[in-house]
Length: 179
Ligand SMILES: Cc1cc2nc3c(=O)[nH]c(=O)nc-3n(C[C@H](O)[C@H](O)[C@H](O)COP(=O)(O)O)c2cc1C
Image (cartoon, rainbow, N blue to C red; front, side, top):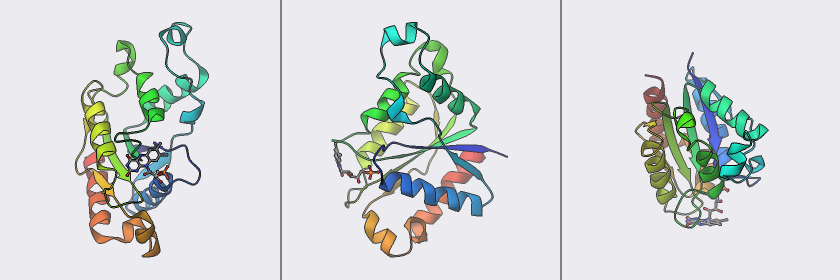
């Protein structure tokens, strides 16, 4: 069975992105897929430095790399911070920059969800994360990507994926990730 790794780009608690991924995991399970959260805490990863890399990394960097490597596919949910995806995700990706670690992402199927409390759906975060993953990291970024706005309204109406269009998009993403 395809193992889907879920990575929230938010280290806030509570987080509408982490909550959306929890609901995505339930939908995935209902549809017969296996999805589980990244256990490494992005906030525990040190800021990238060449010296840190030279010293052999860090336990959280190693565990992040191992978890990504073991996954068949990865789904991110990202908030938007000042027009792009958050620094904590950038930092995690920076630890995959060196040539010997880029293969972590090369060809790996990746889906991107973005969630915002407002109407703009964190579309810029979604776009910049997809561009980063597909560009330098050569990941296989699948479509459809999923953009979610007005989170509280969706929650009040029964949850994010009670919305028929979002449910259809999420299921199409799951199918594309596991095809
Ligand atoms: C540093 C920072 C920058 C933000 N920049 C944006 C932004 O550019 N666009 C936007 O729609 N919301 C922005 N927000 C609001 C976030 O969308 C909101 O805090 C959201 O709840 C974050 O998702 P989370 O709950 O999963 O952390 C920003 C929030 C923070 C803390």
